[in-house]
Amino acid sequence: MSGRRTSSRLKIMTRSSSKSLEKSPPKPTPYSRNGRKCASKDPNGQVHNRPADAEHPNDTSKTSNSTKGKPSSKESPAGPPNQPNIAPGRCELVEVIENTQGCRTGSLVTMDVLVITHEDATVILTTDRDNSSVNALFREGVEERTSSLPLSHCLTNFTVIEDNLVAAGVWCLAKIIVFKVFPDLDLQRTIETSTRYSCIAFLSPGTMVGSYVQKAGVEIFDMSGNVLRKFDVIHIDEPYSLCTFNGNCIVGDTKKRAIMSFNDMGNMQFKYPPRGGKKFVGLLTVTAHRGYIYAADRKGNRVVQLTVDGKFVRDVLTAEDGIEEPQGICITDDNLLYVSVIYSYIKVFRIG
Image (cartoon, rainbow, N blue to C red; front, top):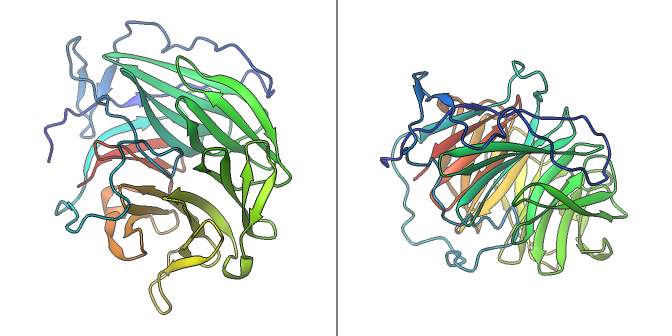
């Protein structure tokens, strides 16, 4: 395992004072003061104070996650390596980020998580269902602060569409919001759509792809919300989540309890598990990273790794690793897997 320093166990404070999609100036939080040093707990429960010269828990490598949006120009080749670097044994738990009932404005449900690095700063974004907001935990050196972007409704998921620009679907509304992340959360615009998307993902410059559960379908649309193409729905029943990789669209279908991959014309490339194979329990959240597909099987309390052509690799995390109802997942280039658990905390693991 890496000698990476165990980082802090933090409580993310949120705010929900505004319930409008209008642009709102960021409001200070108890953690927003520069220079604040936090007492912390490691995964073993030992309390310690972070020294001023401590190594920062996240390095400044660029996050490259095609599931969450625009792929980096430094991304690894399209296919999986011939000999995947898979560490034996369990993954290493390096951090727990909490947002519990102990926080007066804390949400009980965190829907999605996205980690972005920009210059020397890293931000962890979460969608807050109860407070209908985007929450951000900024880390730069040993400094930490939080920010919140209040909205009128909960968001579905995040996808990066340009450097420092993130899009998110709005739950139960035919809308997508676009916001800047650095130097602070800032709402840019709202895209009106003809469909209420359960999940969206960046596909190519100027286009996104979205899935919808009502009437079940997947379609490609432009940045103005105009539908360009619909997929053949014969293979799709309940597309709860999706991601993209090398122009293909990977769909997690809750009703079929399976993962399917389609090209940009809507032709199915594979379905996992194959006929007769062990199915997922349900509520699948998918992401793709460095030639692999990862799926959070919420009801099955596990995170699974597949190749991009639909071959099973391993169970990355199971209930034995302390995973209970994983909802959102994000993987960074330094092999950190962020898992948002449905009851509002994030566990961070180092994976092989």
